Length: 173
Image 1 (cartoon, rainbow, N blue to C red):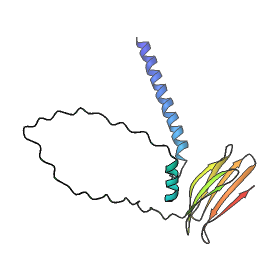
Image 2: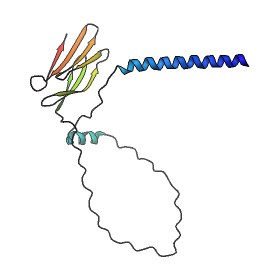
Image 3: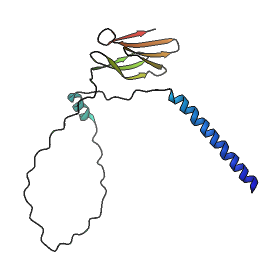
Image 4: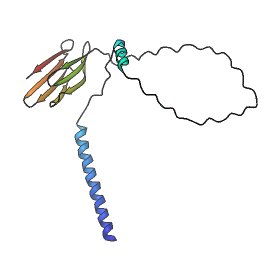
């Protein structure tokens, strides 16, 4: 009995040590990575209407059934009184939190980079490498560079705004 207990304790300690070491290794690697939060791309009312007309109708949501108690009344119910209803106000979308410029996508042989080009700066909305390509993103206060690479091929999408409005240049090496 004592021998089995020693084996169980040894197994538990080894498992705990392996789990801790694995978690620490994954945590260390993932702590060095950074991703920009996804942003919603603004669309016009015409695009939204066109998209809504092509979408299949959503399935109806089931409502839970609750047993309704049988009311017991000893007095007659009061007569309904007319009420005046006013139409609900039309909801207005909240103003954007950051000034949005012109969202432009740049498709290359190595992938796709999407920038939000404002009047004095730009932000990277998304960058997606093509199949078989890898990607790196470099950012400073005055430029963003997205580099797609595969073997000896390289495509760079470079957006800078240090001496004027944002300008995007695509180069293939």
